Length: 32
Image (cartoon, rainbow, N blue to C red; front, side, top):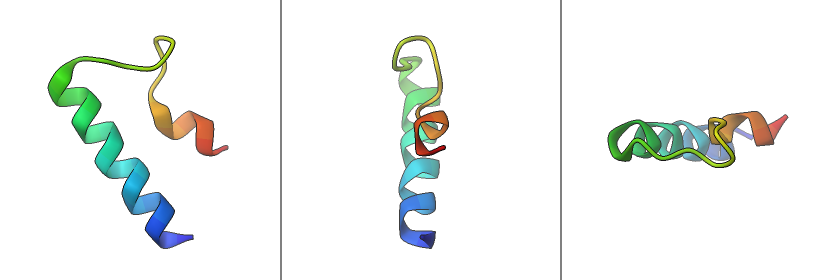
C-alpha cells in the first residue's frame, strides 16, 4: 500500500529529526 509506505517514510523522517527510534530500530522495519 503506497499510503502505508508514505506514512512509514514520514515516521522515519520524524524519528530522524527527534533522534528517537523504537527499540533502537527504524520503524519501517516493522512493516516487513
